Image 1: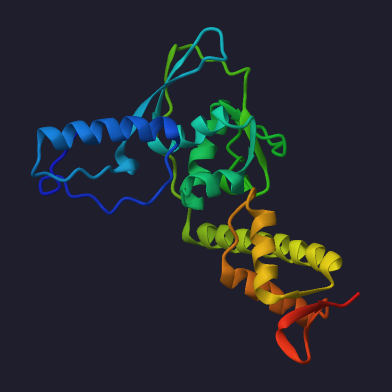
Image 2 (image 1 turned 180 degrees about the vertical axis):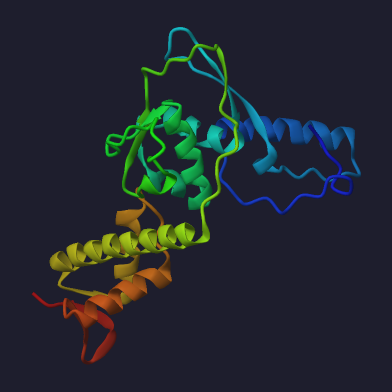
Length: 244
C-alpha cells in the first residue's frame, strides 16, 4: 500500500537493517514506482508494513502473516540455525525494546524456541523481560497450527518505562563485562599494546557478537585501570601494560 504523507502522516521510521531477501524486493518496487511517478519520493515505513512468509520445513507448509520486524528476524535463520538475542539485535538494528516484543510474539506461538527459558511459554508469568541478551534463539521445527494461514502480526502490550530502563541498563552492563573480558584476554597475550591497537582488536574479536562502540571500550579500559588489571606506560600514556 502506498500512502500520501500529507494525508497519512506517520512518525519517522526507525532505521533497521533488512535481510537481502527483502532488499531485493524493495529495490525492485522502488525502481518501478519512481519510473512511474518521476516527481514523487518513496519512503518505506517498516513499522507499518507486513507480508507473508511460507515455512518450508514443516508438514504441512504454513503461510505466516508477519510484520516487517518479525520477517527480518525470521529470515535470519536462513543464514544460521542459532542466534543470540544480542546477535539478532546487531544484525537487524531493531531497537532492543521492539526486538523483545518481536521475539516474545514468536516464542508465545512456538514458532521459535529458546533453551534458556524454562518457564511455560503459555503461562501469563512469561514476560518480554524474561528474554536476556545472551539467550539463544532458534527455529522450532515442531511448530504446529490448526490453521494453514497464521496471523502473527498482532499487537503486544507495551513495556513500562521502568522496564525499558532496566533492560537498557542490563544490556549495557552485560556488554561492559564482555568487553572487559576481551580486553584482559588480549592483554594477557600482548602484555603491552597501544591504545588504538587494543580497541581495534577488541572490535575484531567481538564483531561476531555485537559492534562495541569506541566510547564504551574506552570506559572499560579506564575501569580495568582502576581495578589494577592495566596501567598506562609511564613514558607513553598511549601504551597500556598488563599487570599480571
